[in-house]
Image 1 (cartoon, protein in one colour):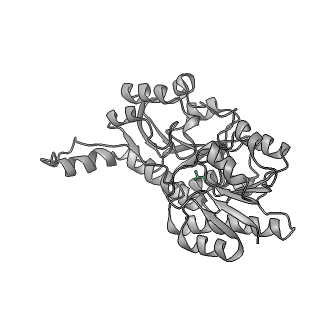
Image 2 (cartoon, rainbow, N blue to C red):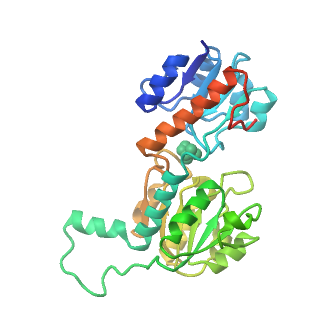
Image 3 (cartoon, helix red, strand yellow):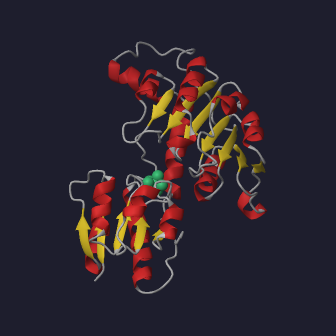
Length: 318
Ligand code: DGY
């Protein structure tokens, strides 16, 4: 039986399956593991199953044991892993695509609707007892139906967001490294640049991976390209956004409202957003449904099973 270290507590059916097929070490108190702890585990493990909270930077990868053969990520995003360093060490890396697209798209829609319709402010009025009367001119939000939605990153999650948004009769625009074929585009309008997309749409959803090319994609300059009164949603990664520039735009009203599930600093987020009533925030809940968290575990274990059976893991990245 291969030795597998699982660095975070996972839902019970996933742990039960893992324990049937592997000799499992579990980070039972579920703390975020430090670089030293990850390195130490690698000396006891043939495989690691990690989340995006565990950082395998080049420095950490250089210290990993030769024993470690595979890192099976329990995530679709792999910006916490230095893939080229892992490749150089001959360590196989997998992720969990597809299975979290529906859950993440649900959160994108929740944030889009909630930010547009002032859900945070409304909820606060009831909790604080400040709702004194119904008034035609109070708490007027922005209608989502029939607006132009700009999706940055039209991969699996972006396409699922588009599908859900079409239910609100939204007109879909997108930018992506490559234009999609017509059967996947489904009538969405392709923009070759972020600038062209931002200049065109009423609402924006970030759904692209964090890479050196996309880091701080939303910054003072690109916010300037956005139409005044735009609604902005990020369910991808915090590092795509210059948060100070976003706060400035929220305060000036250039960005009317934002829905954020991800932050530059996680856990914790950015306390400065708490002063902005036009921001609806969640603590990185994109994939957090019981169904999806089980499916992610099954996908990661399928990858491990294939690897240890001498087959190519379905979601091998390097
Ligand atoms: C992912 O899978 O990338 C989600 O953000 C959760 O880690």
